[in-house]
Image (cartoon, rainbow, N blue to C red; front, side):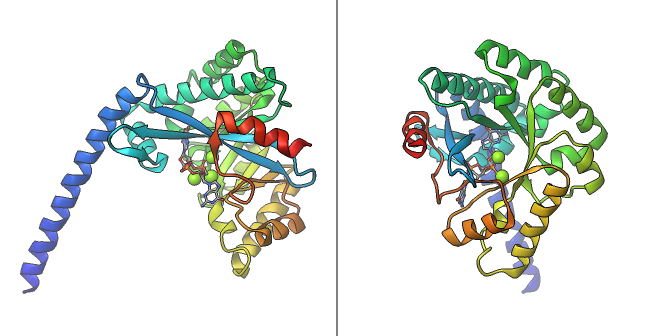
Length: 279
Ligand code: C2E
Ligand code: MG
Ligand code: MG
Ligand code: MG
């Protein structure tokens, strides 16, 4: 019986794995066409200053609506784009679209804010990344200090010395960097000091249960005080409740981002949102 169960389990996994690799192949091919067919969009989520309540930045987040498959989450298609190398073209499109959008908002009279763009490890490892980013900023006639590149801890810690060199190059070009999903990876504190980042994004997994989990409170409070001693800014991701916000304010977190303020939204809704909060 055990043997039979074992065989069934084996068969079950095989079928599942087959379905999964078929889906990956399907998405990879669809993704290849998605860029040209205008199926990729960016949504923008405001980043709010804790003290003034103003929108001081926005994170660009990829959205893919496939005509037959419907909405596909970046959590599913980004890894596929990375494995196939497509992330390079997609990432360049994201950078350019986000920069053009910010320029457009400013031309329409919106105050300058920081545009935060997620960067894949595949992009970060390319030797031409810094010059590509500079070229896009030039094309868009945008000040480098208005762009922030979000890197995850893993990207930096995988090859810390290489990462430091790239960060120095980007920093010399006036481009800001932050560490995304901070606390989920494995950051060596001694490297953190050498990384040319100016902000830590506290991962939403620590924010979620802030109101009733003393350990999460301790972790968040430790991240904020460590950031302060290193001269780094902090932003909390995934803020959904007033209770979370109150705790973060008490601890001196600089910025917040989350559904409590707004979900990521299409570009045309973003301008009115900012204007409504500036009054
Ligand atoms: P991330 O960069 O950590 O982005 C934050 C995620 O949290 C986003 O999910 C956002 O929609 C979601 N979020 C924001 N506020 C809240 C909240 O209050 N509650 C909850 N539950 N969630 C909130 P999204 O848009 O599905 O993106 C998932 C991940 O996909 C991102 O995580 C990022 O790692 C990746 N990603 C998205 N766009 C890009 C891109 O243009 N390039 C690259 N390389 N990765 C991207
Ligand atoms: Mg991010
Ligand atoms: Mg994050
Ligand atoms: Mg994330």
